[in-house]
Amino acid sequence: MKLHGGQVSAVGANFDNYPSAVQGEWTGHLQRIPSGHHRLVSITPISIDRNGLAPYLGNEGAQPLAVLGEPWSSVDFSTPEVLQAFLNHARVVIEVFTPDILVVGIEVNLLRKLAPRDWADYVEFQRQVYQTLRAENRSLTLMLSFTAADMLDDWSDTDTATQRQALRDVEDYTEIFGISIYPYLTRHLTGPLPENLFTELAGLSSRPYAITETGYFAAEQTFEIGPELTVTFEGTPQKQQDWLAWVLREADRRDYRFVINFVNRDYDALCEVAMCTDAQRDWQATGLINAAGNPRPALETWENDLARPLRR
Image (cartoon, rainbow, N blue to C red; front, top):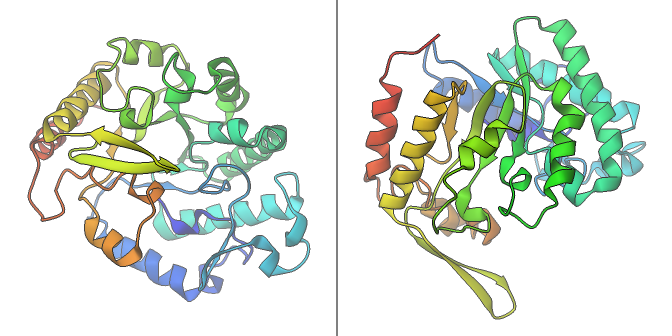
C-alpha cells in the first residue's frame, strides 16, 4: 500500500491532527485489509517526480511546503524540521497500520540521478530515519526501494556506476533490497529482454531481495513523448503473463521475500474522470483484470502462485 500521506507531514505525531481527507482515505484502506493479512506500507520523503522533497498533503491535495509558513519555504533534507516531520509521520503510520514492513523511501536512487546536489543530505537524512525508527520498533522491517533498471547495463540512459554507488550509499539503512521494475519503461520497451536479468540483479546487493512493484502492459498503448513524437508500447496479455511467470519463478528460485504486482485492474474509468496525463497512464493497462472487469491470463498465474504454501 502506498499512502498519499507519504508526502512530508508537519502536523505532529497524532493522527487526529491529520487533514480530514487523509484520515478518510486511510480509514478506507484499513477497512479493506483482510484479517490476518501481512501488511507492507510505503511512505517517502521524496516527491513523486523523485527530484526533491515531497510536498505537503492537505485537504486541498498536494501543495507547496511554503503554504505552511516559515521555515517551510526554504527547507531541504538537511533541515531539522523536515527530519522531525517525517519521523512523526512514520510513527503515525506505524501506529495506525501496524505494518510488518515499512518502506521509508520509494525509488530513492532516482534522487541521485535527478537532484544530485541533494543526495549527500538525503543519505544523512535516511541514516537518521533508519536508526531512529529501528531503535523504536525492534520487530518492524524497514526498507527502501530502487529502480533496479537504472543499475543494469544497457537498460536505461543512466550512468549505472553512479546508480550502483547510490545503492551502496544507503545500503546500511535498508534491510531488504526493494526492486521497482517495469521492463516496458526501459530501453527494451515491450521487446525481448536479456536472459541474464535476474543474474545481473543478484550481483547488486548483499541484502535479501524483494520486488516492491512491477507490471507489464497487457494492451497496446501509445503516448506522446514530445512535439510530434509518439511511442507505442506493443503490450499483449501473453507478454504480460510471460513476464509475471518469469518474475515469480525467479523470485521463488532466488528466495525473494515478496513480489508486489501493480496494478490489480486497468484504471480506464479513473482516467476518464481525472483526465490522466500520459505519465499517469504508465500503468493503465497493467491490470491482471482489464477495464471491463474480465480476468487476463496473468491473473491465473498470480493466483496459482499465491495459493502455494508459504515457505518460512
